[in-house]
Every structure is written in structure tokens, then in C-alpha cells.
Image (tube, rainbow, N blue to C red; front, side):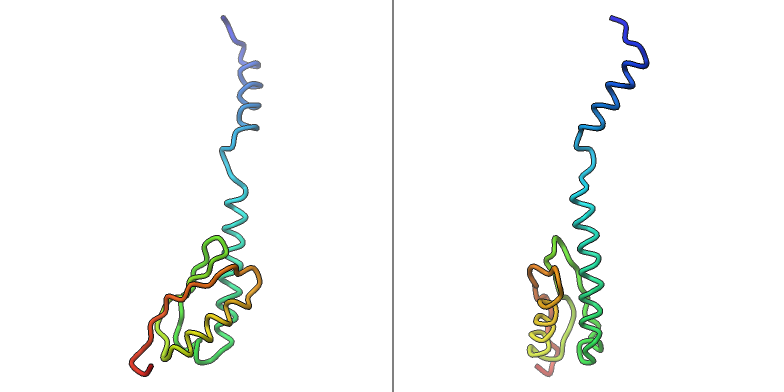
Length: 102
């Protein structure tokens, strides 16, 4: 059986158009997480004590992880509360450690 190039191109285009080769949902999650990280950093930086600690933040599927050292557990609790109030944050995971003061 001989297949013309035009037929091959049409079938290939149809297969590619209907195949899940690329997930737009993954891109949306990545963009959302990047926006969340920016918003969280801005919120944390608006508090002098937390800004001085230089906390690190990561967001994965709208779950925010807070890393770094804080002076007291109260500061960690403040950071968690601030992050919880950022739009689109579904969950906060506190991975901070306390310094010698607390």
C-alpha cells in the first residue's frame, strides 16, 4: 500500500492535535505557584522580624513550604499565619527551625 505524503501529513497532524503530548494544566500550576511564591515573599518581607531571618519559600501545587531559621517558635507561627492569608495558598508546611533564643 502506497501512502501519499499529503495523507501522511494530515494523519500526523490529527494524531498530534488529539494526543496529550503537552499538559496545559501543568503550566497553569507552575504559573500559579510562581505567583504564590512572589506574593508570599512580599507578605513575609512586610514584617521586619521575618524579613531579617531571610526565610525561603517554595510552592508546589499551591502548598507552600517555609524554610529557614527563626528566632522563636512564635515567629514561625507568625510566618505560617501570614502565609495562610495569601490568596490561593491551600496549605502551609512549616519547615523552619528555631535559633538559640527560642
